[in-house]
Length: 103
Image 1 (tube, rainbow, N blue to C red):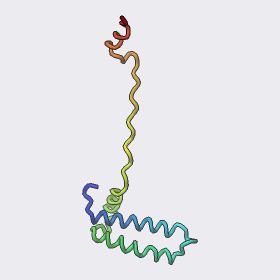
Image 2: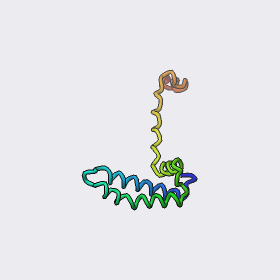
Image 3: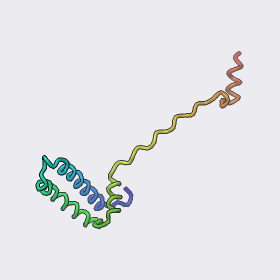
Image 4: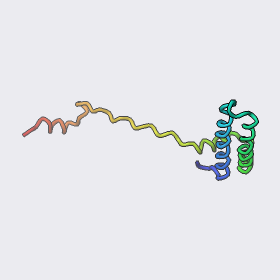
């Protein structure tokens, strides 16, 4: 999260809360009528708008999306490749000499 100010971080968090609230409120129109969904979303919309204004991100969707991506966990690194199998030709000569000379 290099270069992200606390105000930008707060704005990104407010937008994520709005997104999650909108998903929950609008997921089943039979359960939540549109008027009730609008009422449920009024608070998170106002909070996100105010946070965006404070952070200077109003109308700057690209910067906002960058801040939101800063909040998400980064994907894990790829696992290391398995070690290569050694063939008998790859064995150093010194090892082969020891194997053959048993006294």
